[in-house]
Amino acid sequence: MKILVINSGSSSLKYQLFNMETENVLAKGLIQRIGIDGSYLEYESGEGEEIVIEKDIPNHKVGIELLIETLISKKHGVLANMDEIEAVGHRIVHGGEAFAESTIIDDQAIKKLEDVADLAPLHNPPNIMGIKVCQELMPDKPQVGVFDTAFHQSMPEKAYIYALPYEYYEKYGVRRYGFHGTSHGYVAKRAAKMMDQDLSELKIITCHLGNGASVAAVKNGKSVDTSMGLTPLEGLVMGTRCGDIDPAIIPFLLEKEDMTPSEIDNILNKESGLLGVSGVSSDSRDVEDAAAEGNHQAEIALELFDYRVKKYIGAYTAAMGGVDAIVFTAGIGENSIDTRANILSGLEYLGVELDKEANDCRGKEVLISTDDSKVKAMIVPTNEELVIAKDTMELVK
Ligand code: AMP
Image 1 (tube, rainbow, N blue to C red):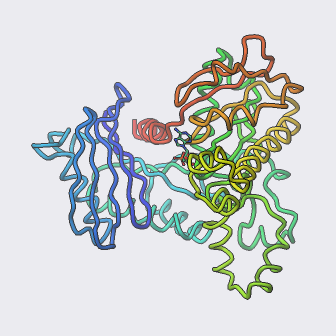
Image 2: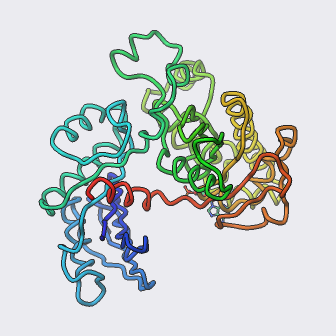
């Protein structure tokens, strides 16, 4: 069975084609600058052949048509025809309270998605557009939605209700939803496998540390808390997002800097985090390089990043009444040796003992705690696309 996975953004679209018998990626690619001058499609076949097609791509429909053309092209393609594709799985950022699991997209699902679109105005409309174009171009293929928020729908009320007047929850759905759910769910499952134990008996803290970053408390296989909230802005320090701040800073700055709400929104989402504090870059590698050269702001940015993760680990250990494993994933979690070491240092009292040699490694599924560490620590490379493909396959079977 072959499944196409699509992650449709406003001006870009990522895709992967899976052979589900082997779980291998047959082809993958990225369409960039949709609706902007200089648009192009990058394509890589499973064998590593890479091509770039520069072409005017004024909208998602033209982009997805080009993607299909490439997949079945005699020269570079990997499919004889489109009938080989069984279904399409779509990454959807926000499912609100309407979607606690992946679902086949029908008219009713589209309507529900449109109802929650204002919770993620930058992400959900292009996600919906990707689905509609695929429905139009491949009317006989089932379309499946997989939601970043779904895994966290198991959070108890005490974890998701904000201490604001309750009417805002009732009227607008203002509550904590959490994101990166496919990643947290996947790495928690892999961690249980590595420990040779049942996920349903474990307390796991999953740290998804990438440009966007979040921590989740996964108790008996279910998310009971996570650091992102109504939007992905809450929680950890991220590449350009501030994470947790005193909300009173917002009216204070609005007045002092004479800013508009959209200007402050831009500052909090695009100009804060590692970039804002270091003044160097949103990319942790650049910040690490600057810190190594003695740049104080870069040093502080990294310390702040690690310290915030450490605090969440402490909080979630308390929330779950203990912890059996701490998992690191995503760009920084999988690759930054120092970040993992700094986060875990000082947590020996919880029973975590880092194996420095094992931690000296990047992007591999591996235990990084010592053999006799009571709490296990591990790196698990995330694979959100594979989860989307698997959920899609399960639903269409
Ligand atoms: P992601 O959003 O998961 O793609 O992660 C992006 C972040 O991962 C960026 O801050 C990168 O600097 C970081 N990252 C990626 N590769 C490495 C690496 N080899 N070493 C350290 N950080 C890395």
